[in-house]
Each structure stands twice: as structure tokens, then as C-alpha cells.
Length: 132
Image (cartoon, rainbow, N blue to C red; front, top):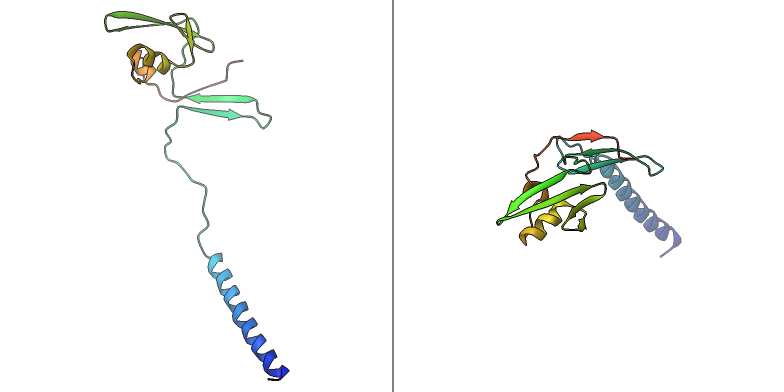
């Protein structure tokens, strides 16, 4: 086999490889690119809007905002339970809790939604500036 046959064989392989690569590139160019998802409705409890420097700018929440000092009262199994709303959580029987759900679970011995247990109304989304 002389060099001319080797060159022709190389060029054939090169042409097939190049053509395959160009066809694959053309096909992938027309494949639909994923777009950003658009939501008609989302279901979340809270959205925090944060500045690039990390500072909390805005809070959008569907939870009722309870003012510190508010007292929640619930009767359960013949006993009246009192919960005090604090700046950073709740107080029940001289113990601090971070959520009403933890307190409802402690009272009932099973998992409950805290706001539902204490009869708090469901609210629409409310936006507010974060507490300083």
C-alpha cells in the first residue's frame, strides 16, 4: 500500500468524522433550550428578599405576624394552655420555643400545625419590611 492510498483512507475517515460532528452540532443547535420556569402560583410560607451584601430587605409571608406580648390561650383535654409571643419565638410553661408547632406537639403528644392548633386565621400573602 502506497502513501497515496493511506492519504485517501485518512481523508475519508476525516470527512466522515467531520461530517458527523457538523451534523451533531446542527442538531443540537435546534434543540429547544431550557427556559426559566414561570409560575402562575407558588405555595411557600415565607420569601426573604436579600440585598447583595446579605442584608435582609423585605419579607413576604403568609403567616400571621403576632406582636410580642400577645398571649395565645387554648384549652386541650380539660387544661387551659397559655403561650406568650416573644420577639424571637414563644414561651410556654417557662420554656422557649421557636415555633407554635413545637408547642402544639408538646401539648398533644403528636404533630399538629401550631397556627391551626391555636386557631389563628389563614391569611393572604403579606409583605412587610423586616424587623430591625
